[in-house]
Length: 364
Image (tube, rainbow, N blue to C red; front, side, top):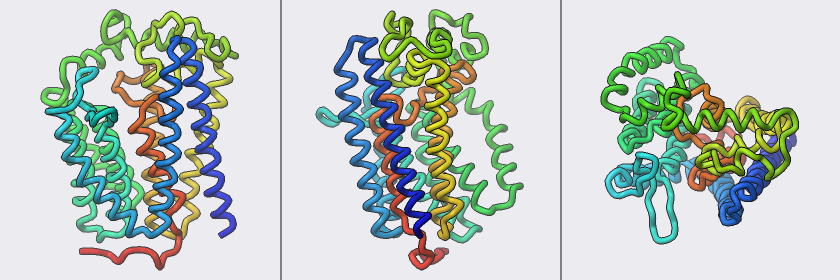
């Protein structure tokens, strides 16, 4: 019990340390862009992130059943809102992803990720195996399809990853996982023809040959790599990155935020930042392996894999190793709904009890 408490405290402190990196980096970005409003808004968003973390902790601390009902509520409200965003939402970068209510703008897809992680963990750990895959497929592929038609293929892929990871860690035959991967590969031509818009295809072309699309889809990738390289070993100093000052990088405060770390603090800064993030993610996975509760094990692995997927995809994207798909870097990028949603899940991961007697009974 004492070891578990130390682990939970460690996850919390590492989470706060990652948030601190995000705040410091966003200050440097605001200096380079000469826009103090970005930093003020990010600090306010970070306060909401901490508040969301506490809410997730309190809800999960009450009982697993209360957390499960919360996941259902998120699912009921978020999935229709994703579809609503497609027709009535705010359009940006070729997709309608956001909903505006007064002064508040949010992305319902990120709320659906909360329900997806919670419900998938419940289904895979507590539902009888013969129907678990069907239930998990429903709670993941329904929001994935609605998200893809916005179109937001990057966010839609997150639901697919959640589903695949849940199948992989939930003691199902490996043959089932391989079969699902095979089906997804076979479906790619249909996704290419009917799911991808022209700008998606141009991004893939730009990924294969950025210079050929330099003045359009490849511009962001090329400029991102130049900024990363300009940081050298030690960087130029906080807020002193010359390439960013020239405003060559579009959306530096959002999807490209980690580029600013490379530019300002160099290879050493990137290495230290990624090491802290790696230790943070490792602590979430350790939470899974040391828990006596199978639900906590599955929940923690899915959460850790979800955050890791965002981190890796963003790093690959900004370094030109993957097409631009609009995936933010957790807690580093200015991505309000995204960060608030993930922080809720992290708080829930810490708050969930480990006692087996608190588990649900199997259903169906």
